[in-house]
Length: 417
Image 1: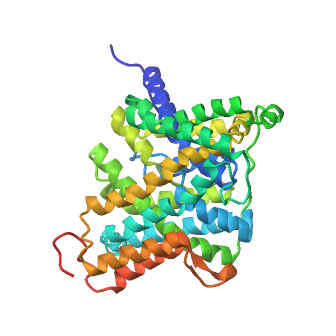
Image 2: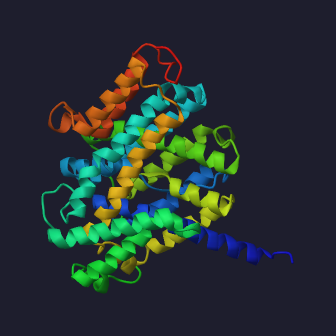
Image 3: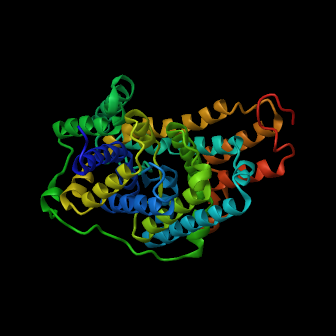
């Protein structure tokens, strides 16, 4: 029996809802951690995905949403400069993507290989995960992310966070099919139910919220100090983006680096980030969880992501939904983040192993070692608002050392420095 257009659209819509479900947990966790509006994040994720599809001519089945690489910089920037200035700085980071896309178009993908080889990519990704470890642990113990305030009693928080973590791990390891791709949602549900039993969930805001409401969009403001603080951070999610494009290329057996081209994917990501920040949302990046769902379902049709984007935009206007998300207790998120942030670090470690980076070569050892210590140790160069630290500092250091130290073409196993 031949499928009618209605049947085809129905299947695409169902698949799109599944893709959004897979991305949903990480999508809303990022704004909840950084104090941004989850409804705005939903809207900008959908709008950013649609913009990405336009730029890439609808050829790649990917979904764009909140980037974890920006968590620590967004928290720090808001404390130093304010929310509007932070959004302006994130818009500038998106523009940097656009400039990087122009460089790739002019110089080719070899330009990326020289500037961002695995010996640079891996330690930066590891720093993203490990530098955020204290935030996860503090939240798991019922504290604010910086550890300054005890929000929920320690004993209660520990039980809730450990259950959330245990359920997340169990689903990720033991579940089958699509259920295996939504461990975050499973962990949130389990932790939320237990939180109700402990009486630490306040649903007053949900009762007061309207069913339909326009998300709380925020206009950006531009401060050159905030921009200089944020720009170096963009190197890390650019690295993450390239890895995700390679991953989806492997899954679909299409070379997206050539068609539509890495310059177009970077441009789409950059414009999506600029759009998101211009409305008060977190910067966008391609989601590896969705790539896993594409691989599992074997649904390579990019139109599925159009439906996922549409559903995300629709959810953004349900006021009670956003209010409910913001009632998720801190320990629930903390327990899950213990796994997520650690997983990011493991991705970096796996990058070293997969590309057989030879750490017995002195230059490779130096690049990785210094990047890790500077990033995780919290080295600060400069003072006050004119300082460089964390992910921004280690990204610049890794790129600079790789370009300056002799033997930059020899990072693989068996090469001599």
